Length: 250
Length: 287
Image (cartoon, rainbow over all chains, first blue to last red; front, side, top):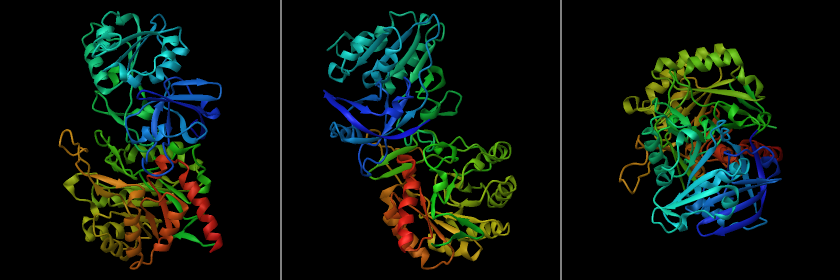
């Protein structure tokens, strides 16, 4: 059941280009599962107009957290909020991550802020391996919580942190057929992963958790469609946001 | 308390939702109390299924929203089948307004007849104005004679209906023609045509180049259209264009509307129509 909840900001932390908000959201927290997202009204006025979608980054008791990359008007408006302020949150939205296939331990692949939904997911798994990539170290999300919940492998395009290269360079050391793969990140990362997966002798069991431009988040506006290989379209919000990698064209 | 009626249909209050912004109704289940609304308008249905436009489909602008959805819907036959077998609308304690768009002028009467026959529907909306279809490039309301022909044919069914018009055509001429031809109400209006460009590629942002513009940004223009149509017609006007509060709804009533339809803001605040209805009730009591 989707709930609109006015939530108090308990903590607002800015680290580099990332904002983390911990929200008192007892109703949403009661049912939010890893892989689902919330749609947040970033201001009180009409500009920005639409809510902004964020994967549930963490959940504890009555609280949920979101991790936000500060990149536009909506996210900057959120950064100006303080602890004690109230924001309107709609959720939980979308479908949770499917469980890892028995005998195929999870392997998480994240690009930048795409790591956000994986912390809550990882907490319910036994310290999964996670490949986390970014263009440079400044675009990597805060690492502490991921380090405690995951076995972290970092790559940056410029080598400023972790190994030099992309997540695919790290991924090459893994036997994909032995894992259930979950990926979340920018479009370019999905495109590169699709190409890599297509070249495998056996199609890997891999899921893409997408971030798209979204109107409502609950299936009414039909604004967040994603092309499918059969020529059809999927709605990111209600069909996803997690899809089998071969179900969507990116 | 005022009486809110279109043709033979009474409404508990003058607040409706706009087609294309309230899905097929079920999307808002649990998010708003339907029994607080005058009615809900379902997403426009076309004779055949439409998968809609390839993305991108929406773009936010200051206080507004551009959309190029392309009338995505499962098609008339499928919707009629669902109505007859599952009766989804019976669960909603409010008037159900069913929006239709034909591919030909004859489609409207044929579709209207089929929907009325399926039951569970309280009113029809003839969407003569959706700007996103390219069939020949023109919309039905680009020609007053078309409007007159379609409306007079549907009027013969003697079932409550409203005619949704575009602000990008001769909305005043079309309003007068629709009233003359027997329309029971007018919905003023559909979205305004708009554009955006991708500065990196130099191309229009949307594949169809133009998109429909809606949201609080269009309210002053919608008010103007409602005002000038209200000077010329006697049938009820359902105002649709950027209303986001009871205060906005009051302005539309002052401009001459009898009903207010909430559109884009449903995406932002799924219970906005209920909030507007509550606020408006207070105003109408004081009147």
